Image (cartoon, rainbow, N blue to C red; front, top):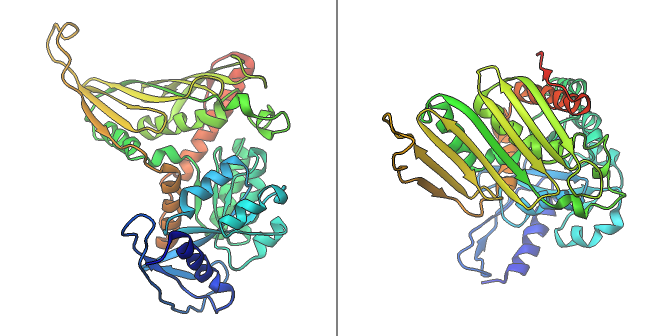
Length: 397
């Protein structure tokens, strides 16, 4: 038996063995009890080319990733996968402020790259994960794709339709995998809700209501790019509201009209709250409230002719379904007992990264399609225009 820290050092030593051996492949370890990990180790050797995964883990490809942007959210992305064996592992980081993260990178066995160009040129990096200012996404995705790196980018994908089209074209030409950090789509309760809507278990859908709130707006320094209107327009729309837009598009399809109101409701940095009404081409309506200056909560509810379903709690732990009551006096009838599914503590951030790695390995498309990404960019553009003009905006695909 060996203590966890010692095994972690061994894990990383063997992982970085690919710098000393000719593309060595790695480890399998079974955690049998807390803090005690018996292990076996084996090596195989591969003859690989640029951006081909070099590590084989339990029969799966282990994607070597670079994190670009290592602020609070960049660290969240790393932490979501780094502590457990899996299909993706961060080996490299690049940040504008390396001195602030040296200790963190040392603890995570991540080496700091000297420049963005060094990341692009490194043959021992298979994928690049971007946690950078929103306005940089288009050019960074394009450059990463041209360097034959798979790309995972934090939401929003880009800040405008032209940027999205350019980035998607670069990805298509390079033949690399693209993932986007709309991670709440990967929570099993969200998958459950989408499935019940798509399979008709809720009947004909009338409306969807969703809220996603946090108090993060109070803690952003004035020097943060997140407080700039050009980086995060229309209040909380691109920082949190995009998750709710993505969920609704996944359930109800394309949107025809958008009305958006952005306002400052208590935060120190301008607009921090967004109300959004979506009219879907199917006739469904969607109502969204999102804020970075309100007590933390998450809820998404769908109302159908055959039932009502919702997801509750900030981490989406609870799924609840109540079937419709039939009969003329249904508004007075006793509500049936709810079906409740609890899935506490699910790591949906890590799940989205793992799914990205699996798509690379199996050469399968990421679940959020280019068509959905482009349509959601159109919704964002319409919402930003609506918030500015105070008018409803029609979406033309």
